[in-house]
Amino acid sequence: MEAIAEKTLTYNDLLKLYPDEARVELIDNEIYEMSAPNLEHQEIVLELAVSIRQYAKDKQLGKVIVAPFDVVINENLVVQPDITFVGTANILNLQQRGYFGAPDLLVEVISPSSYTRDNSKKKKIYAEAGVKEYWIVEPANQVVEIWKLTGKEYELHSYLIESGVAHSAILEGFEVAGKSIFG
Image (cartoon, rainbow, N blue to C red):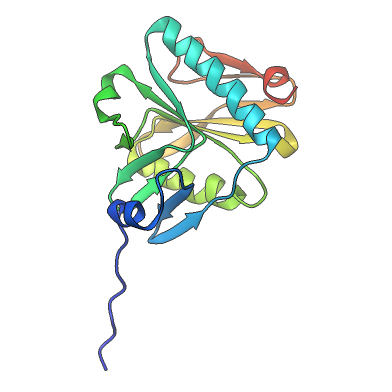
């Protein structure tokens, strides 16, 4: 008996299966349905997004988008990072329904349920896709890790714990204080 090949899911399949406002990701042919984030998560996302947006707007560096918003790295890989920064050179990849390609900077505010996926699987995927900077924000331990792409792998660029300060690699001069994020 011949094995039946499993269908490879695509972005178009997600669009057919879920309403526009759904919080879903497609990674390694698996669909991840995400529940609504908690208050602490949303406060951190808002603080970071507003700070990054204002800095980028003042310097005319690009756009900031918050989840839920699709980042379609390729037709078989769709994620919804908490914050997406798109530099002016890549603005043409930004469309009404999502960003198509590898954005310049992504931020994930992780929870215990998303820790492994965000800190391991997505980190590897983002590096391979060419995302220049990846932030992992861990509210439980008040930690921010800023990873800078070097070749095809990330190296730790900046690390913030509790009340320290972290510096962006690609947004030159931008820094964020732990007191403002976790306070």
